[in-house]
Image (cartoon, rainbow, N blue to C red):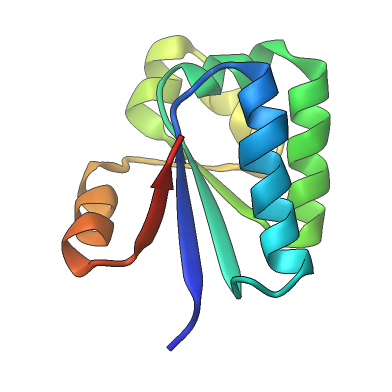
Length: 112
């Protein structure tokens, strides 16, 4: 069974992004704590990415390291940032059902 971690990122604080979400996601792969890491962008975090150059740079670096990013389409569409996220290589999709499946299946998830 693949060791897979999902990080549900809803906190739009840039310090929390850099010092928890990005640090743990990157180190998780680098140190082989997890085989696959997915960061789920939900709510205000989509706007933070669109507005903050440093956050975008960090995400691009993490994508290059193998961290997978996917954003809630409903949120990104409502905030008008879907195109910007997709241009960065971030998947944009409806996350309601997939999140429910993760929770009901008992897969590993951190909510930040």
